[in-house]
Image 1 (cartoon, rainbow, N blue to C red):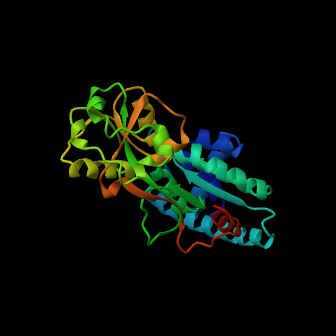
Image 2: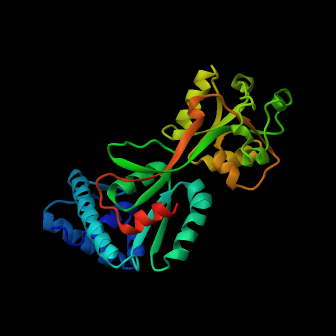
Image 3: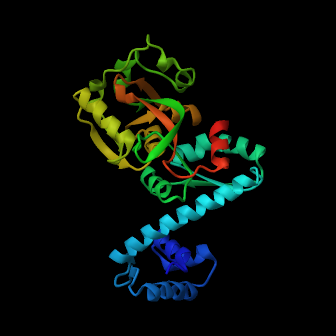
Length: 309
């Protein structure tokens, strides 16, 4: 009943027969035939092809859930086999948003692959929501993120603390009144913002400025909302974005104020176009963790990576 499930799952991931066929290195007619064969075996359609954009049928959704369970079991057994080979082979799939995938993970993965050159490393970059789905389904081993994830479902390995800051275009006139609170990128790298003698900025001074916030559901956005609410500030939102680094780069070009982490500031090149301010709220502090699914067999390659970091 689940013959050809990998073909079906690739179509589900891409929601496109043509893209899935390219990924699988087969022709589109061959892929269509394989999916139709799977549908014939179960006696119901998996995909609704009645519109321009294919979708899963109700039975198709249950079929995909079953596939993910089977794939998870297969992956767990393959990882067990790889462990018996003493880390001479195997794979590790790690996901992160643009910030983590571009700046934080590369040096860690470089160190790891130098020690274990036979291990295949897959680095996946996407939004937190997309990555969480992949971690749950088993296509990711680890997810690095600053979001608090459900402890009933996911376990975590602590990586570091990070602090949210206010990133303000230097050309804004409000900075003239805030000189006693202003910090540079060098100050952040030297951890001056962690010094208790450095005062947090009164957020209400930025009430009339434009803000660049992340979209609802993002951890940084949720924290920014609570920080603003606590300061009795209703931000004038100019743009809502998916990635923290995108908001940061737009702030660099003077488009508005954004909330950014000291992790980001430490990893990107210095920019004289921004001024940074310390924030006074418990939500300005959070953890960065590596998350993995609770109850799933942890391959030796994954535990070795976590020990290394």
